[in-house]
Image (tube, rainbow, N blue to C red; front, side, top):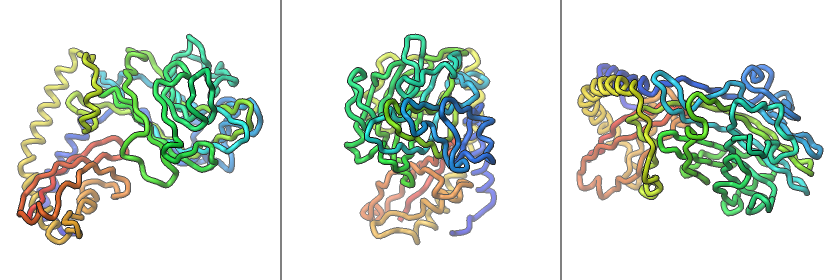
Amino acid sequence: MAAFPSSRYFIILFLLTLSFESLLADTNSSFSFKNFGWNSSFESVLALYGDAKAVNDGSSLQLTAPSVSSAGRVIYKNPIKFYGGIPEKLVSLSTYFSFSISPDSKNGDGLAFVVFSDGYPVDLFDDNGSFGLPNGDNFKFLSVEFDTSMDDKYGDMNENHIGIDLSSFVSLKAMNLSSVNLGLKSGNRLQVWIDYQSSSRRLEVRLNRYGETRPVDPLLFHRIDLAKIWPGNEGFFVGLTSSNGNSSQLCNLYSWSFKTRQSPDWMHSEPLDPMVFKEREENEIKIHKKSDCVMRILSALILGIGLGALGSFIEAIVDISHSLIQNKRDEDGWVDSWRDLCTWFSPLSWGQCHLTCSKTMTRDALKNRSRVIVLTLVLKPNGIVSFFFLSLTN
């Protein structure tokens, strides 16, 4: 990798990144368990209910037992609020987990990620209910179900689908996984990403085979304002729950991570897809607080300092990227230096970065000696967004 021309550019870059990350700092509710061995101390953070237990020296949590009418759940002990921080901002959340469901001649319910009010006693959950959850007017919940049974009374499409439920097991939106060649009860390990963006009020669900990359596009999404469901200081719990009904279906959880975060008012999280913008409701509800005025002034000052250094920063990156690019064009005329730049700008390795960019430069564009500045975002797994500019020159 080429040496960088001056240490002052690194200082400018560091200060600029620090300003962005400071604005994005939040009051975290987070945990991450790659397994559930006793040395991971997961029981200080997570509570097990019903038949849930750690098995195979903590390599997984077995949520259901190999017997009929078994149910179990794992719940994050700390209640969360959709308003948090100083000043209060809407909270977004993300979770990742990997699991497997064993095949069985009879179909169990499957697995569900659930968000429910903290005032509801977890030990009163109905083990005979769908996914081991209560189904009544007094139980307010949001769930993403990974359903392995077909129940006509809930309008299930088949025995292999995912759905988004709100205080009812009749899904607001569902998708047939057989259409994308994914099977929930194959016994194979699967991985899930669920993200809720408070600013866009958009819930996204991604699913893939274990070991494969996170899909760019969600399999399922739905616009929902969770701050209306859990308003003000009302808290909620998050968890994973499973039941097997009349089968002996096993559900195992291998890993689980969860994180909340806040986004500044000026940060837009809408996907850059014009079709998505058409889904906007005509009357969006905006939250105004007196303290926002102070924070906006502070944000403007910090952003102004960052933009003041941006001119020198862009000039530095233009020189750096130009020297890198001259020797790194691939056979299509595209520059293969994204990896080097990402590695330098982030303490994370390339494999840990998610790089959002568009491969729009072609050999013809480079032959025409065009000069383009590209703004690129690097979204780190901890939710922090970093920016850098890349100049493409011939």
